Every structure is written in structure tokens, then in C-alpha cells.
Length: 222
Ligand code: C5P
Image (cartoon, rainbow, N blue to C red; front, side):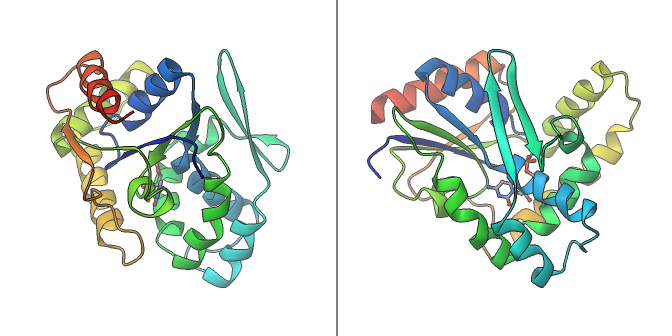
């Protein structure tokens, strides 16, 4: 594997997706949204009536997961078993379900090869929780992006408000804290910064400022 890889890890809502997409666009590299794979697996489990803690049922589902990412100028469509689930995977219920299936070691193991197969020339930007620690430990540039739980809840609130959804910010903050605890507390591939990661706190920074800081770091590594 000599394809250059940039990893972007961190807690939910820190802005990893936005940063990774901008990086992939700017370098014209491939993009792996590993969270989307866990989200799709959660949807598949719900479709097939498999419980979210049933490792015997989930691990074959994960190995054989029939998902494709169809990228075009207007974005990426996520297709599960022939059905477009692009919008379905983005809600909070599925996010929480994803974090439950993601806590199962056999599931993570089953998804390793699939994630690594995204590493193709000219390069890859990989977004997730364990990209720099487990999936691509030899990545050339690793970023660990954080933001305070309050800042993340506020951003999520504005996103949802823009979609016309009415939610309580206190509720979002609770969800974020619960998800952090689950992602950081699990025994397999817990959320943590790789030793050689550049830790970037996006609290109070604009999207452009985060991008500029990340790019400066990456360019020093390439
Ligand atoms: O990043 P996103 O919110 O889409 O991820 C959904 C869930 O999938 C996360 O809360 C986390 O539990 C899990 N996940 C993971 N490892 C990754 C990416 C996501 O455990 N590399």
C-alpha cells in the first residue's frame, strides 16, 4: 500500500465530514466516509430484523454487505441492496444504531478489508473514528479534529433548523455526550487520537480556517 492517505478522525459533529470532503476535492483524491458504512450496516440490520447487539447475525451481514457509493459532481449516492439510502442513513436514530453495531469487534473486523479497498491512486482521504489508529496506521498525514460538545450541539442544531426541523439543543447535547461516551469507551478501536496525529480544535473556527490549518499540516507531510 503506497497510496498516500490522509486520515481525519474525531468525535461526531466536529466537522470531519466537511473538512474531509474539502480535502478530497482540493487534492482530487478518493474519499472514504467510514461512518456511512456503519450507518448502512445499521439500516441493513433493521431491514433484516437483526438486533443491534446480535454479533452472530451482524458479522456475516457486515462481511457480505451489499453497498455501493456512486459519486458524481453533485455528491455521493449510497445504495444498499439496490435501494438508495442516501437520506435514510443521515438521521439521529441511524447514527445511534450505527454506534451500537460499531461497538462489536467482529463487525469492525469484517469491515476492515472493505475500508482498505478505498485506498487507490492518486490518494485517499479517510474520515472516521479509527482511520489513523487501526484502518490506516501508516497514513502520511493524520488529523484529529475535535470541538467542544456545546459547539458541536450548536452546529447540529443549526443544520437541523435549516432543514426545518424543530429540536431542543439540550437534547442534542445529551445525544452527543452519550455517543462520545460509547465511541470512546468501547474496547475495540475506541475513539482516540493517533500518537502522530495533528490535534485540531475547531471550536470557534470557521470552515475555511479549519481547512487552511489542516492543509498547512498536510502539505508539510506530503
Ligand atoms: O461519522 P458518523 O457519525 O457517520 O458515524 C456513525 C457512527 O459509526 C459513529 O458514532 C461511530 O460509532 C461509528 N463509527 C466507527 N468507526 C468509524 C466511523 C464511524 O465506529 N471509523
